[in-house]
Image (cartoon, rainbow, N blue to C red; front, side, top):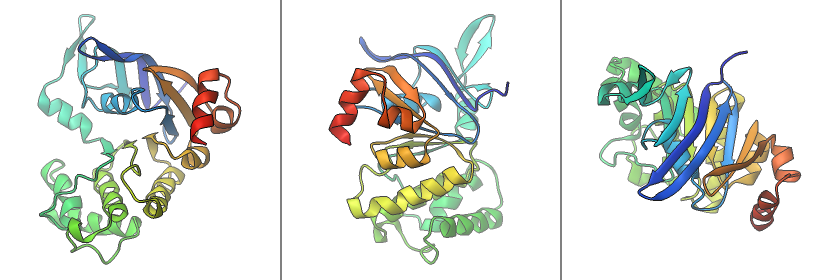
Length: 254
């Protein structure tokens, strides 16, 4: 059998004495979309941040494309990688946050081209050409020379997605990418994400947008108190959940 693009086993994460993730297992196949849902404080964002080692795990393993993330094995034990190796791994894992985190002093084009030049050592000519292509892909052609302050929140988030795609990631992580947007701006961002899903991008999406999860996800995972309560196809989890806790949560959000 082909190994999954994302493989998480018995993942534990605590902040001090407070457990946040308690033995999470997760598989995401190449080209698949997994949406993670659950109440506030359930560990969704922490799980996402563990996938690219923005958070150090306490126990368990995370693999992306068959590579152990954040650690190496030596004589049966895990040893944390150095900063350079971790940076190399993160370069292959795009992440889009709730807040856009664009550089305010750089134009749209410069925001997208900066990392490929600095991290991937691409020529400025190639990086800028790719940036222009991505601006068109997210529906913002003509805004290349604008600064972030001239863009709406939804436009800034689409540029943040383009910036992540400029690194040609194997995996895209989205941490509630529409939660900071006005309702009328949500659709454009979800449209870009749906196009990525249709194009075969492997994605893990923490979201409260149940319509997107129903339409775009291959798998929906319901996380509560740091535990995977239920997972399966969208129709199974969102329409006919097996667990009472899942039914209770969905009754409040749908």
